[in-house]
Image: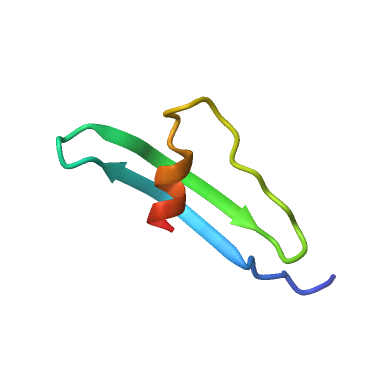
Length: 55
């Protein structure tokens, strides 16, 4: 059995609320292993930029 590889990026249960109280992210989780490529894809206003700013 090989040793587990640690992710180079791991986000667990990320949530975000705007100053006006609007919840824009709820429990977002993501794990990226070395050598993997991931993309955030979604409609306008889906929270892609918010995730980037929070990270």
